[in-house]
Amino acid sequence: MQAVNEDIDLKQMRDMAAAKKRWDGLLREGKVKLLTPREAGYAISLSNKPLLDVRPSSERNKAWVKGSTWVPIFENEDNLDAGTLSKKVTSFAMGGWWSGAPILSFNRLFLSKVEEKFPKEAELIVACQKGLRSLAACELLYNAGYENLFWVQGGLESAQDEDLVTEGVQPLKLAGIGGFSEFLGWTDQQRAQAAKEGWGYRLVYTARLFGVILAADALFVGAQQLGHYIQELRGH
Image (tube, rainbow, N blue to C red; front, top):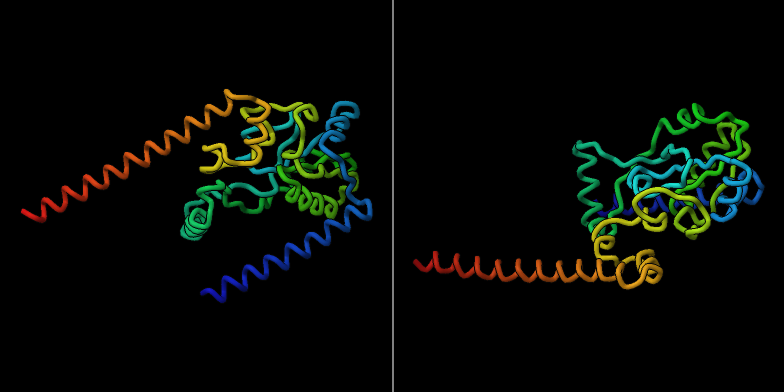
């Protein structure tokens, strides 16, 4: 089993390296043009270029660019079959409980949905949270006949507050985080946000940390009491 897992990991590494080489070629040859988040904001506001958001719903539902069109290239895996449940358990055990990283599957309707919304000659700004999935989307779109593509370098996560007009319950920078680290505010994005927001923002996460400590302490004391109770029952 370990050898099989190592073979799978090696194949994934090779596939990613090959994909990155193709994506670098698209950018180097000018088939996909590069924009910073600020340049994307200018292009949207001044040239009325559409922004195609390819993030999964777990990120899109938290924050989005106002007026953007959403077609995910990967979507959250919500099936409850044995294979998906096994993946979720493995992901949770391997750190998913901390990072909140979801299990994603390729959206087979991605191209058809984009083609329903945009003609092949459209100038499309393509963005995701960190920049990798949007590059994969650009490759698919280019191969399908879209030749006026713009990629947001670094993804929406790298945008400053003034770069893009946004909507949602959180800042764009925080849309890609989750899990226990998000709850405690222990991510780089949240620390940067805390520096801007001030003490009020920090107090929320400090209170959560104390709550976790108190809950853990209560569980520990409860476990001790239960142990003593079981020993007394055995003694009788």
